[in-house]
Image (cartoon, rainbow, N blue to C red):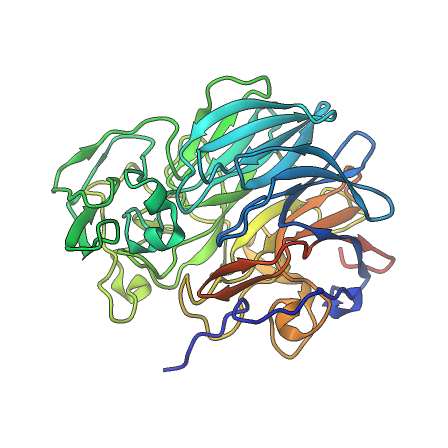
Length: 464
């Protein structure tokens, strides 16, 4: 009965204000602005000297296209371009043995993993990744085994190409694109009929794991192949064919290794949109088990989408199953985060000087309502701390105010849309990448030059 009131449903008047006192932290911690004026920043990494480098995406949902870049943050807060490229969006960066590694989403031409030298040279390690749909190539992270790990998102919300993908824009450019499973799957034959925006006339019927306008039948087998969608891969930093680590994710965005060497990831979960909308699914923090299948497109956090009490949208049919049989039982989540919170980049505390050793810190980009589904108040727009042993989630850095939301909505100078976090090499400082202003006026509207980098440190008397 009430309309949606997401955090992105705001107007914005430039310039963006900054005020560290607008951000609440636990006792004993402080935050400061390191750099502003960044253009859609998505990740941060540090070289051998401890200097910070940031990736600028070059693209976000909407119509704003710029050049993706890697920039070095100077002590005075200004930044110096190290490399500029193509294949936007650049969705994160990690540094290892003298080189940077960037996940290039490839919205137009397919995803890549790039090696970027400190002199700006760019070498492609992996290309032709299936990332021209809703979700892109994400990560990356260096594992204790020396391999480079990265995530690959799905083409669609819930396995079926529909009108929402036309609205996203990619169905116009790539009408034959669809999700690809990592292993052979057998379908139930669930199909969905919609109007045909490609021709403007008539209706078409579409099933799961096939191109728009292609119907499926019960018992139909869809062959798996590598690379596939909704999966985590690893590759040697020297290059080579990517190896499948685990699959059955929707959008594995943030990857990080805990102090004990265990890989964790954040999954952006289902939206209430498209031909197969799914209601009420929080984003998920997973421990990644090699070889496991995590449930997409038929499960959320271990719960079957056939459960109409949990997942049926109001006025829509229950999602049901698109797979006639499932590869395995999906593993249980480490934690379930806010619905539509867009829980993205994460890192783990390793230094007692900062505190909370072994806990995960997660950047929550914030909701993109009403496009992803209805919310009654803003969700996300903060940094949370997760005890991965218990699954307990607590706010760590959040804007002050009577309600939650981005700084532009609250009229203050705090956090806008945290998209990534990373501890510096010493582990004593947590850096927060703030994407900047993105409003939801029909289509997402990112605002150029409003991104920022923040630093959180611990003074005396902080919590352990």
